[in-house]
Length: 516
Ligand SMILES: NC(=O)c1ccc[n+]([C@@H]2O[C@H](COP(=O)([O-])OP(=O)(O)OC[C@H]3O[C@@H](n4cnc5c(N)ncnc54)[C@H](O)[C@@H]3O)[C@@H](O)[C@H]2O)c1
Image (cartoon, rainbow, N blue to C red; front, side, top):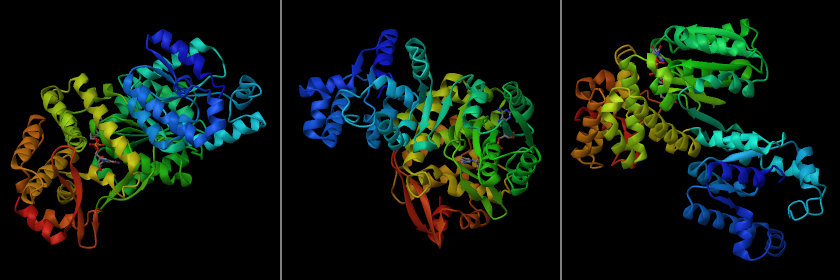
């Protein structure tokens, strides 16, 4: 209330040429009485129901438009998530004193009627903090320059940002050429001090880490650079200790931000180091490999490998921001880009038929690394990952679906000492094994196995899993995290969009895999 949504929405509609819908007005037209009367006569729950129905109807009939919503509309979690998926959801914000000045005595505003306006506003803002944080952009309106605010709204609407809506821990995955230029701003928003720990590896540091460190320094940050040896073989506790040592020697404090600039290895290590440094500091991710952009930088899983297997020690620690800038892929070796495409195929199969068909259409362009097709693949995968992480932040259910191909993939990687295949190549092989197994147990037809193999081959990924499925590799399945006692929860694919979890006895699974 008083944030300026009606006046800003009017200007946004005029400047964008889109139709304007004011939800309160639509409700009043619908009901034939004022919102205040509706509140008084039917009470808040009945009003909210009417509000939900009216908005869904409006959106159904007008998928494009500018919608000015009441502040209470987004308190309904389901509706809010629908809105996040349907368009750009923006929170307008102003200090309480300014809001109180704008709403005056609160006339015509049932939630303020007869109360101490400022105190009531504070209480409402507190109660709705989680809801208001789950949006594509928060824009401050205290300057009251409506044209300037409308410009910020229009810029946010043009931006591609996937929101991971986790209440006050919500964050945005910003996707687009050049978004790395926002690093200093995002760090300032996340930081409680000027100290930044920028973690990178030997390959990425000179290409991208250093220019980003320079950007941060130009913005007045004190940057501690940590340059790790590259590759999965260095995803170890020793690397985590190097980050901690450098950070503490560099004077890190509770307000520091750790920034991971690199592939999945750097991201997982930087995230884990941040989760425990001084009992937890903020982390931001600037993924530089395709795999990290489509998968590992989103979702807050962090950790490192031990001699017992991959990622067996780690923590959930959500980033404060993720900047996915496909321009950074220009220097990524072809084999790494191709490996990242395996996770894209995995995401598409979990997402559904349209996503798989889209990849099949784009396969030649993706193989060649064309920017438009690559951007489409990143958006599809990031949106899927976000949706699943939102449903299941700590991997107790749906999130485990993202491990499609990973049970066997991880076992192959572990047996090879993390030195043979790229992670993505191992995942491609693991998917083929999972698909063949699914065909054996009647979950899908041989045509779908062939379809997967054709797509993987067109993207330059391996499919010859048979030669890897020897007893030594299978023994590593027993140490997979998805295992409970002698049961393994296996991600069993069906048709696109129909992937599910199924428990198998360890020996049964090994038997089935050997026959694939
Ligand atoms: N946390 C998660 O949810 C999650 C999800 C999937 C995978 N992962 C992890 O991600 C890791 C694999 O990630 P990855 O494939 O990015 O490996 P990686 O980090 O080892 O990067 C691959 C190689 O590419 C180089 N590189 C990266 N970006 C570059 C660039 N722009 N230009 C030039 N070189 C560049 C790196 O130095 C490295 O040599 C695995 O450890 C896996 O377990 C984590």
